[in-house]
Image (cartoon, rainbow, N blue to C red; front, top):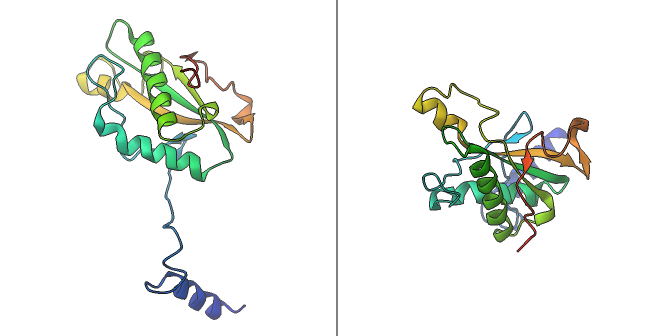
Length: 169
């Protein structure tokens, strides 16, 4: 097929009102940085708890769509990071497990999720400032396994503490 014909066919498939344009789902855009799925909005919690806020819904839906589209991602590690609290490790684990359970409620197969807490061991900013602590307190969805194999031979848990079984009721 000539380049001109291919371009015309492509245009025809996307024109409103054509039989194909109405059936084709819009392309989904996902950004990955260092194996981390970039979220459109942060996952947020009530202060000092593992209770998700309603502001997290967009990010949770984004993760669920990503896993629906990327069936070859066999393990997505949900990393919990917490800075500035005495129980950072425990809270990071509870938050990671809470996010995985929320994703299961969104239809994600629990066997594809691994909740892991890191506490305050992997800062990305200076924790001596409120802004830095806010950046260091986060949830990071990380591609850990592709087609049932760990990425780069690394352990699926990434060196953190597994927070629990997202399949347990």
